[in-house]
Image (cartoon, rainbow, N blue to C red; front, top):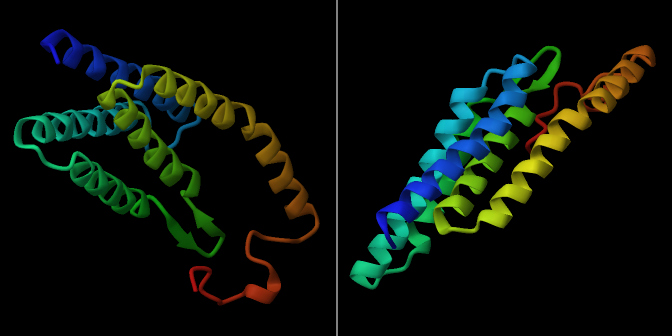
Length: 158
């Protein structure tokens, strides 16, 4: 793989992360533009390292990729907060997880998959936000919360 190809993969990762991050920034979410760019770029770099190490040392390229997934899961878990008003940050955590997956696509050279995933992610985050707000308002009107009365005090992860 040439140096130009390595750079192209990293630049595509930055662009994909920027598209997702811009939407998050627009909505004032904690993991915004810079965070999503760095997650996407970092995942791409780890994937590039994985491919190079596998090529040079005849090892399994999935080993590093598997650790990226685990590490991103830990980072995403830190974005989830359970408070009196319910659970917050699930979309942010899912976006972090997805940005890493897109970064891995870029690092592996799957540009079509990365681009398509980025567009779909952007459309889901932007396009479904009004529907999500509408449904939340309907729950409030009916006196319901994200946790139903039958689940009060119960750990949702059990």
